[in-house]
Image (cartoon, rainbow, N blue to C red; front, side, top):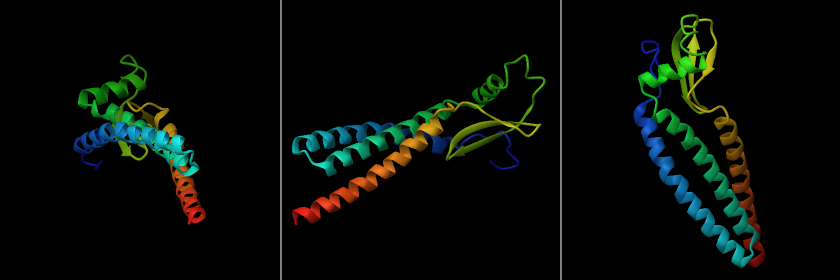
Length: 159
């Protein structure tokens, strides 16, 4: 967001692309995770189970982020103003509080209504989204590392 466009939201092209990518990736990863877990269950291999769990954690991460991006996809100019009005206490309090700009970011995913007294109020993106996506991302990275290490150790033992 630049100073000459204080009420500019997220780039709509980026929001659309992220939405499409997430809507395709989430079910694709979920199917891949299920197939991996079924195969690992049949073979009873620890590396396969860890890999499946890691993929499921990535499904949760990508799915949560996509859920947040979909909230942004529905925000046109009117919806942005309505979201700020709602978070600031409704239309009867709107005359007391004046939004002077929007503050947006993709990481963490947020849409904020900045008011003249210096505070920014989060709107449109559910409050639980970033913590859940963050925890699942940390879990996904940890499980991916464990799966890679387990696979390396499994190959060393069988060689």
